[in-house]
Image (cartoon, rainbow, N blue to C red):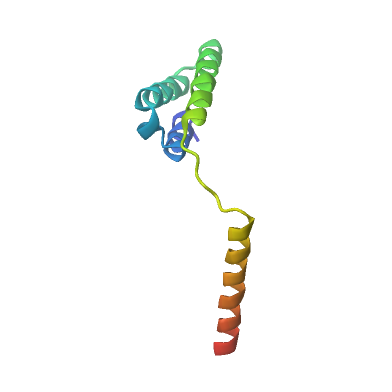
Amino acid sequence: MSVASSIAAELDELHAEETSPGMAAVALALAEAIDATESLPEKATGADKLRSIMNDLRKLAPVESKGDAVDDIAEQRAKRRAAARRAADG
C-alpha cells in the first residue's frame, strides 16, 4: 500500500476535507511526493513534515460519540432478545 493511499484513507476517516481542507491537501501532496521519490533523505524529511501535519489534523478531527456503558448493556440485551426470538421461532 502506498503512503498516499494510506493517508487518503485516514483523511477520509478524520473528515479532514471538512475541518481543514488546506492541511488535508498538503498532507496528500506530501504523501504523493514521498511515494514519488527514491531519495531516502527526501523521504525522511517528507515523512517528518507529514507526521506533524497528520498530528494536527487528528487534533482537529470531530469527536465521534461512542456509547457509554448503559448503551453497551442495552445493545447486548437487544442482541440476546433477538437471538431468543430466533430460537423460539425456529
